[in-house]
Image (cartoon, rainbow over all chains, first blue to last red; front, side, top):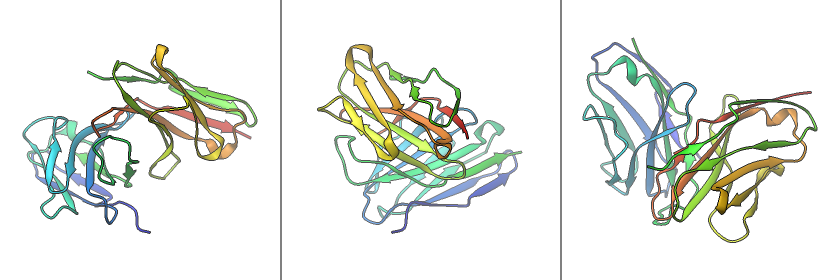
Length: 116
Length: 113
């Protein structure tokens, strides 16, 4: 079956611009996660949705970052006034509904964001 | 705050050598533990996981990991590596009642024929 998909695969933008990154989770997965992976680091948690609501957004670095999941399926990560430090691979993952953290998270291929 | 340490940043082995990658975490409560692998050009995928029960966990492709609670460790092992095991390996943990994963910085494994 289809896995998690992310678009675009690569995005180059100028400092100060606005970008949107899209994630399509596995069908039937109610939990959706965004992570950010900088060069030489492991993925860093940003935000987690259970259905349409953000259950935990404690990893968002500042108010320039915002994510939505209006219908409980596709999610969009939005970054305003991009800075060079935002350059990273943005990963999306999805999993079955879980309150115990014991379901596998399936990762997408990521979007490589480069801010020039 | 929780943290995960992977002390081996880059490991180089010949085929058939044994592998052990270290992972230590800082949280003292109930945790779930994971090893993920990223093969060149591919997505992160789950190798194995530990939630409870037998502390020796077996995963895909002949990998296993042992949870030692007293040492806050979850080291990954494989008795005989293959060239196809060349990849980046990430240890991750979440607290027992949350879903967000905390990852280590990863270990890059290179296996030469």
